[in-house]
Length: 425
Image 1 (cartoon, rainbow, N blue to C red):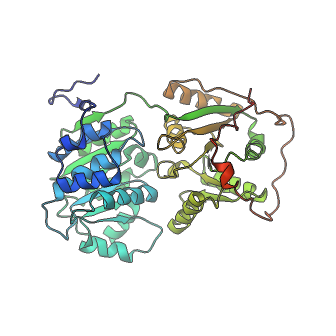
Image 2 (image 1 turned 60 degrees about the horizontal axis):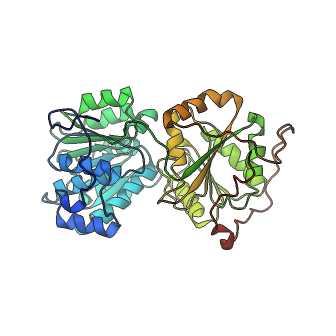
Image 3 (image 1 turned 135 degrees about the vertical axis):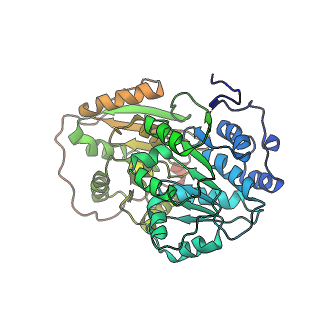
């Protein structure tokens, strides 16, 4: 266990008995917390909020889905309650548009009883509304680095009054090559500020970033190692790489797979899988970095509403997809980075529900898959799918789809998605 004395760099969260009433938050914020449905703070919230409210720099490490967003939003709001309106006082940098929108949604709910306003700033949409927010319409800006730099380049963004900077999903920002953009943005910020850095993992590059940009930060680490989401049943399906599409089509014949999130390694690969699935009659959406914001929103809405039975995505979207009833995650490709597996499978079994995670593992991917097993501390069962012709030649890509396959009826959706595993041996 990490030392807990205030003079040490690392701290464990306070005792489990802590409630939001025990945290140093204004009653207006506690009311927002209650309305959003929070009852007991998570470990990262218990560990972060008291130190962040006091103005201390923070490095927080916790997995996706553990409450990091509220862990930094609540102290940001608390510290800005007495500040005058109409100036940019806090900046939250996040790697993707989906995460920016997700954080903005939380902010609106938590700040509902205060005068503080937030605005998301991201690419793929018009700049006019964002310009107004940056001109003084919001006190808290939630931005992706590239779009914020676009606005800064126009010369009208005033960050001189900024008091708080938050770097959210710092490891993902570095993976996506945002470090030069982050450095450029930091050059426009006041030196005297509070900085909070949150990350699902702590690779050496993130640790170096924290040493460079933070002053005597408090380290809050709630887990020693990465663990997979509770409630997920994991299965590895060994298959030759040229038969992956055939196996995916075979799996989708099971109508209990009502809402299927498929992860591909690259944007080109995702587009190819979508074309092939649509060619076989499956209603399918796609989500990756080359899609415009309106396209990404439409794809997510169609998936949530059941108009798309399948959504194919790349890892850039894994941490920003918030869909309640994903029955299955299918890793069409094994990710290079083991941590990406955790974020992928965490999209199912949300809110104490259960879900299935299938990974199609070719011989060439066995080494990467073994690294995943070492990371999560478990051996994932390898199974052969009954009645699948493993020795059959792969079919050529189909022609244009004639009609999208309808999703299963609501009656079929009610049952737990377990039959996809029955008979595997």
